[in-house]
Amino acid sequence: FEERLGARGFDLHDLAVLVATLEKLIHSEVVERLEATYKTLGKPLDRKLDKHSVLDIIDAYMASWLAKYDISQLSQAQAVKLRDTMGEWKTGWAQIQGFVRSTLRKTSGKLIMMDFIDVTRIVEAVSEGFDRTANPQCKLFEERLLDLEDGNGTGRVRLSDFHASTVRKGYWWFRETADYLRH
Image (cartoon, helix red, strand yellow):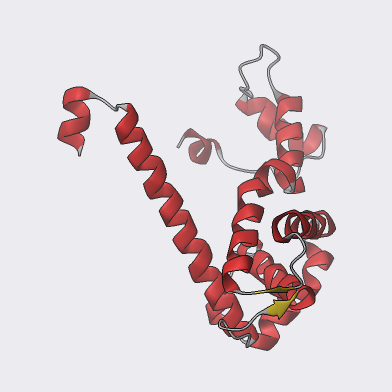
């Protein structure tokens, strides 16, 4: 691959193959995590579920993903507790749930009962739009970093301004070391 890329560069076909490969990897990850979520919650993969059950599954999926837990390593009780307590510690959980519900309505249409393939399609739609529209923490970080920008439109933040923002502006989450930021 490297020899080919170095010899002639990246053409449109190569780009299409790369995109297709990435889409396949993302789809496989969604399916794997969703199957694990069904299994952990004791839901059958081969039966249709009502919207309430589907939302419980998707909320558990999102909670484990956002908390960076491998849901297959949680018990059913742990997964349910994580899902049910997300609002207590995750900034913007209510907005995330609103986005999930809106995406479910748009994606499922008039379906009353949904099978695993339907739920996979919904979760993929949530994943595609999540960072752009529903992740309030990312939006907050973006706003704060833009506030610290040096003003010339490059998007760069002076390291001294970055670290001083903790004291001057109360941006307590910007604590990465200079060494870490260089990488």
